[in-house]
Image (cartoon, rainbow, N blue to C red; front, side, top):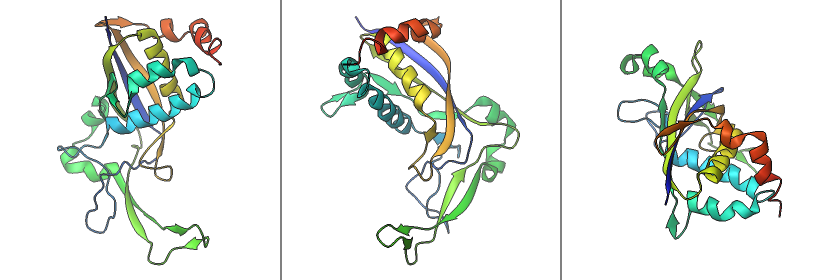
Length: 216
């Protein structure tokens, strides 16, 4: 019987970041992603991708026996994963401080960049472009809140893998050059609807049980 888990987290950006919409506007070649209410947000697919890459690096070194459950959680080409990564939206604290309809431009900044010809090692001809970045606020860190949920076979191993993803994720963005520095905090963990202390699952002794005994 599967167990329902829900992990609520907060992303705190510490530098400008660009998560592109794939569109331009006016003189700006790449604008940031916004929802229908013009709020910046971090899509769940971006969070899932960063977690997948970071966790997989650890699995290839010290937790190889947990690769099957990793595939169950994140999915493979022929099967969807058991976990759902919700998009992360601006925290209530940020929304309360801003009237987004009137002050949305205060949340972003447009920066100029150039494309480098890697073979020649010089700036490519006619390569100047404009990119919009999300900015952290002067008196308040730019925070986004989201959750990861699903029905899983092994909640203990699931939580350990997600904890590794949280701890190793320090940059999120469209690419390395436009990603923003960040840290992620776990706000709440629920198992079958009951609040749990995550330290019970990711304490030193419990982590050693897996990391210390799964190096092959």
